[in-house]
Structure formats: C-alpha cells, structure tokens
Image (cartoon, rainbow, N blue to C red; front, side):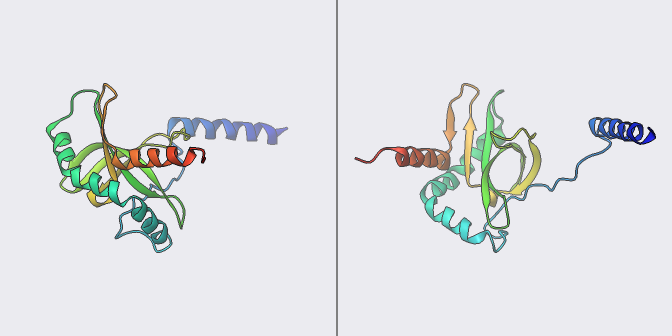
Amino acid sequence: MKTPFCRTLLFILAAGMAHSGLLQAQTTPPVVLTAATAPAGVRPALTRDETALADPMREALRTLPQAKKKFLAGLPTGDQFLLSVRVIATDTSFRQASARVLGWHGNTVQALLLPDAASPAEPVPISFPETAVVDWTLLRASGREEGNYVGRYIDTSRQLESLPLR
C-alpha cells in the first residue's frame, strides 16, 4: 500500500516543482549559422541554399543597412522588425527561422527566436552576429510588409512549382 502512495506523492511534488519553475528541463539553445561557423556536415546544404537564393539574398543584404537605420530610429507602436536566420536542425541540416529584433548593438543582434507555426514552444532569447542574417521584414501594424525578399521568392517558387503542366 505504501508504494502507490509514495509514487503518487512524488508525482505530485515533481509536477508542482515543474509548474513553479524549480525543476526545469535542460534544453540546448538554438545555434544560429553563419557561413564561417557552419559545421562541416551542414556546409553542403548551406552552399546549395545560398546558390538557389543568391539574388533575393543579395537584395536583402544590400537593403539591410537602411532597414537597420529605421529600426534604430524607433518603430511606431505595433510595428515589428523580423530577421530571417538559419538555425541548425540536425548534424547535416538547418532550417530558416524568424527572429523578432529587440536590440541592435554594433553588429550584434538581440532577438527572440520565434517558434515554427506548428510548434507550441515559446520564443527563445538569442543573440547573433549581423552576418547570420539571410533576410529582413519590417511588419507594420497595418499588416503592410517591407523587405522579405527571400520569403517572397520562396513563396513565388512554391506557387510556380504547384502549377499543373500543360
């Protein structure tokens, strides 16, 4: 009779500690990729991606300094400045992720890495060099969007791929 009671008590205590924040799961922070810091296993995929997205990335990076100035001058209430970065997914792959910029100190960005649409996770605070930026989007409170060169290119490519051939 003691064993089920002890298990129940331990379960209740562990659940209470986890809920109160006393017991936290160990999670590894996301690793933002730059061309210089990419692990060897990820480099082939990174090279393929950079070749496929060369033109829109070039335009995004060309216009990033002006967008950075807008952010540093202060955005109106409700506007958000998002940066697209690459985050290691596995030993040989990465995923593109959005980060909401909180601050920009020199060439270092402080941001909240936003979870995927399918993930219930919370945004994760992160810091990364400006050289990790792939694309930028200034999302106005009205819903209007500036930038998003790579994102629009990818969306258009997917739409074209889904068209039936005649």
